[in-house]
Amino acid sequence: MLKEILSQLKERDRQVIVLRYFKDKTQVEVAELLGISQVQVSRIEKRIIEDMKKMLAKA
Image (tube, rainbow, N blue to C red):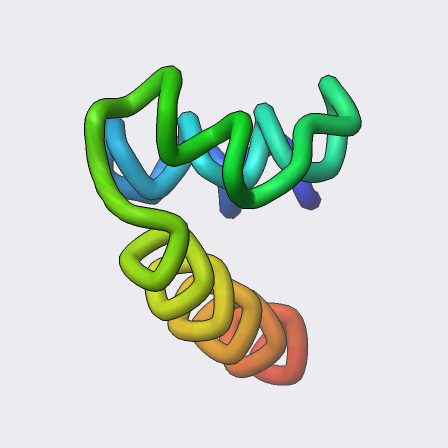
């Protein structure tokens, strides 16, 4: 189910989640890799996690 949810995410959103939770990168490391700020990574991550919780609740 997680794989299906990840496949539905936008490319950048998926990259953030994969780097943070599967590659154990910090928000600062993810920000550097994607060329965005750490604050943006934090906001993206928070939004995605909330969205994923909603998707899982519907399943």
